[in-house]
Amino acid sequence: MHSLLVTLTLGLTLLLLRILTRTASTRYNLPPGPQGGFILGMRRLLPSVEPWKTYARWSQVYGDPVMSFRVYNRHIVVLNSAEAISDLLETKAEIYSDRPMSWMYNVICDRGRAIFNISSSNPRHKQYRKTLQSGLGLRATREYLPLIQQESLRLALGLIQSPEQLVTHVQRNSAAVIMKVAFGYTITDDDPFIKVADEASRISGWATQPGRWLVDHHPIIRFFPSWLPGMGWKRQGLAWRARLRYLAEVPHQWLQEKMASGTHTDCFTSRLLSPDDGNIYSALYAGAGDTTVSAIISFVLLMALHPEVQDDVDLNQISRLPYLNAIMKEVLRFAPVGNMALPHRVTEEDVYRGYRIPKDASIIANVWAVLHDPSIYPEPFTFSPERFMPSSPSNSERSTPQPDSKQWSFGFGKRACPGKRISGLLLTWLTYHTFDHPGIHFAETTMLFAMFNILLRCKISLPSGATKPVEVEFTTGITSHIKLFPIVVEPIKTT
Ligand code: HEM
Image 1: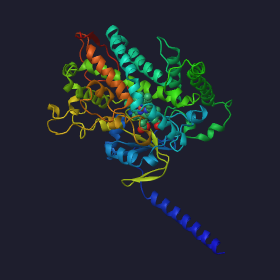
Image 2: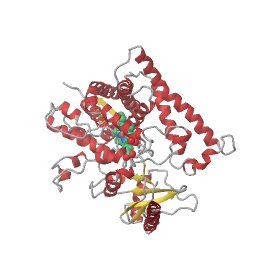
Image 3: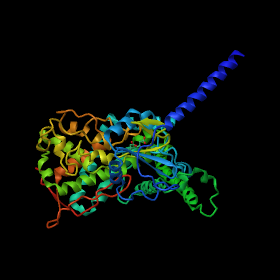
């Protein structure tokens, strides 16, 4: 009798608490933002070009760095300030580190365990990150240095031979490093594995396009049979599912055969994983592929526009080497690779600065807005590596360098780009331990080596008579690129 009473009282208290919390949460408004239509929300009104700029503008129009809107039944919250990004995605990472559910990709295409999309509550996510962090860690990256150096040199020489093939050279560089690291595989010209990886990336990009698939917003329709009229999307999704499964198999089968015959090269996959796990390799390729490519292409194009920067970076003088690091920070700031990182999902209802952040809302960090915030980076549209150097002319008003752009370039909380805590291998290597530089990423090591070799051997400029583009233009996508323009690359005679 007594225990029944206790259970009843407890049950009633819990119910009351739940009602009270719900009432409390509805007392708060959503962050301000455009309303859109009753059913579609902002579906048809979203900017198709450089949305990060529109979001930054909307946040000014609505008077708050935190803004929101709805697409179908999904709330999107955009964080347009460094403070909001840090308060939510870092400080409250426990509840802000999931990914928005992609029914098309995760369920129809059966890629729910892919690293980029896997739920942070799935124990495999933790395991993946641990694996990636040790596989891309300090010791592992040190082992890759000769390979990274060799490929960077090849990139610089390729640029001198055929600068018009800038993209091909840079893509080759990135693929060669990552395929070797992941599989111990040496790529060839016109490589079949590169085609496999590229096709998988392309399909994944289509299947995860935000707002494109109705099933992402009304998941109930996934149960409708694929032969019904109007279900073409499901037939497409199922075809992609089969293709993605096949594509993930190809390199693994190759490695398994090599391992069975004892002819494989020691590599990430053979060392750390059961070779039948296709998720890590595709994450390495997808993660490293277009990101480092975008950053290195931006670097080359920006050098063509800024010959004075090339003159300033004397690579034979150890005291000028921090300047190379400043150039990298400025490339990542001026031309962010991921202007909006990747979307996160909040797993519990939250209240922030008096606004209600509903459970399951997609959270977008507007990295572009932070990296172009004039209160953090004065004259944000000017390319100036000096801003990251102590006591330089453009830094005269500030006694310290401007904040390191890398803290926003590589994402946040439990989804931040893995391997971020690797130390400054290239700089340490180049300067014979003359100065210390913590916090360099595997990607940064690749970037710094490429930049070093290119600057050491190439003089990059615009074709004679070409007018300097007034404004650098960017492509729109998960990763953004500077739109190409012709450049000239001349060899520097090294003594
Ligand atoms: C300049 C180069 C790179 C940039 C700017 C970059 C940036 C990013 C960003 C913004 C994210 C999303 C973080 C978030 O959701 O908050 C991310 C995730 C990720 N990156 Fe990178 N990345 C780069 C290179 C690499 C490389 C070289 C690898 C692997 C070798 C890699 C592997 C990954 C993986 C696996 C994830 C998914 C993490 C997860 O969802 O848990 N990235 N990266």
